[in-house]
Image (cartoon, rainbow, N blue to C red):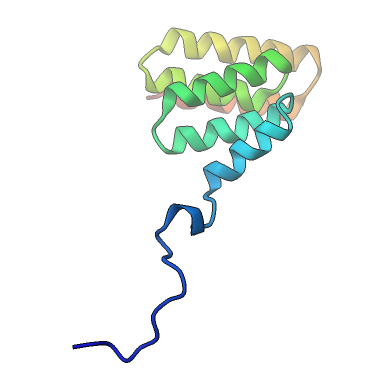
Length: 123
């Protein structure tokens, strides 16, 4: 039996016609701003959400190389290390970030780092 409903003009599952997903958007953002630690950190966070911890850690590491005081990258890197059961590395990453936050007198960063340390140490 043939359907009387109109056929779609395009196949929504076809790769060339699919809307780019969030990961594609973030990759594009990094391509256009490779020195932006926030862009690298957001892309790393998306990889982390998808369970691709190695890709995530690589982006967090790049963000920290660009800006060692970028605490969101340090906290996220520590979470990757913790998920990989490398507790000492996670705590060392956070300790270094806490020191940076103290030196720059960034109270918000210090508080976020301290909270991450508490979460990691209680798990």
